[in-house]
Length: 344
Image (spheres, rainbow, N blue to C red):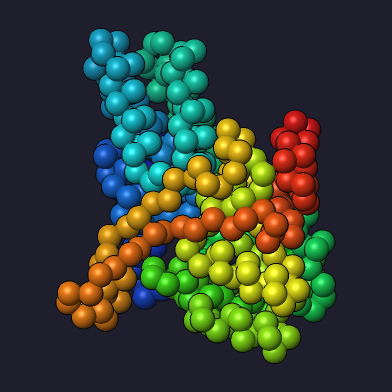
């Protein structure tokens, strides 16, 4: 991937504004933690792993500033920063996983200057580990794809949604690197159009053949026999294998099951929330109605019409063929297979 969506310079966090793609490549340099938090909320940066990495750097940025004021109130102020980032996006578990790692650093390092250095090092480690995990899961997932193959994706789970390389798109990249001939069908992914705007943009840059379809076309394409596999990412996975991902994923899983198309989820083990028995306990973020009522700045829904805009849905475990992680491929029963990978 030739473009980095997240870049730490040492005194600021530079973020590619994903709301402007594909028409413009605009970067924001964040020097204050509040600017980083707003960037997450406003979807300048999005995708569960990328949100976790971005929040970690936001915490490191806060520590740099607060450490200059000395020890008085440092820990209390940092706790408020952690709480602020925890409120940005409730569904993506990688956010809370990353914040927990940063909090553990604060628990063991009390000197503000030392804590600032340690928090920056931890954020860098989280970023590096994410890229390596993506490459490993890419290799595991690539082995599942036939050659040649047509793969359907939903939303964007590529380099833009991670620290680099990608989860679902990482599997596709790894397959292409292994010499397999892969054609991608990118679901448009209403209402934010992550598939049409972001997935297609990434793949065009990497010269991977991609065709954009609207969400409602997926079933007919499967009926015609033109899909060999579906691969999606995840924002949170319950212990039993229920998967929260971008709205529309559940419907896609039903179509895949009906047409006997393998439905794969690619996600790092940090996305698995082992504290949740099933997906019924996953919090589902609801976003502003304007994302549905407007498209490209123009109103497409009449005034007075109601709008419901959940950002995610939950796909039950029995619609998931396999979950691809950086430690291997988990298959049902996921309560056993994911747990075994987590312990390995």
